[in-house]
Amino acid sequence: MFVRSTGLGRTLLTGRIAAIQTTTMVPATLEPSKPGEKEPMRMLMVMEITHPVHWTVRAFLDPPDLRELVMHVIKNPGLIMRGIPFLFSSGPKYDKPADGHAGAAAAAPKAGPAAPPGPSKGPAPIPTRK
Image 1 (cartoon, rainbow, N blue to C red):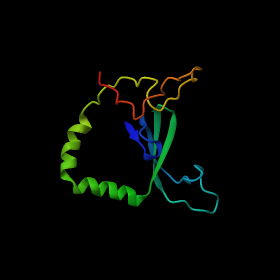
Image 2: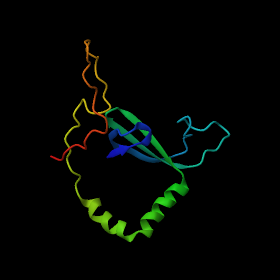
Image 3: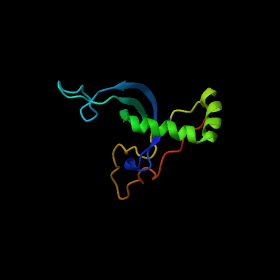
Image 4: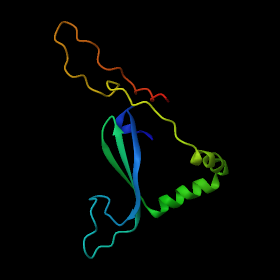
């Protein structure tokens, strides 16, 4: 999967879904609730970002979020019709992203009258299919 975030500029992240489960874990602390406190049941989706950094992203879905997602799919029959073949198709194979794309810092600037230009601005290109 490819992920973009407005907080990261134009960085393109590559990742995968590592787990989906139901839990009563407290989202703020990622720990079980304290004795005597009741935490509502939520759906937890754990995403592993693999490139250009290695992060674990946890998304907690409350019941209204899940209902909204299901209702969006039910109310859009075209989405269902396009989704059925998509569900049973094999995903494309992508090349590994090349190191040194936008967002990677240069090792050390060279001394001299004119330093070479830094990395290009903008996102790295989406990896090509094999």
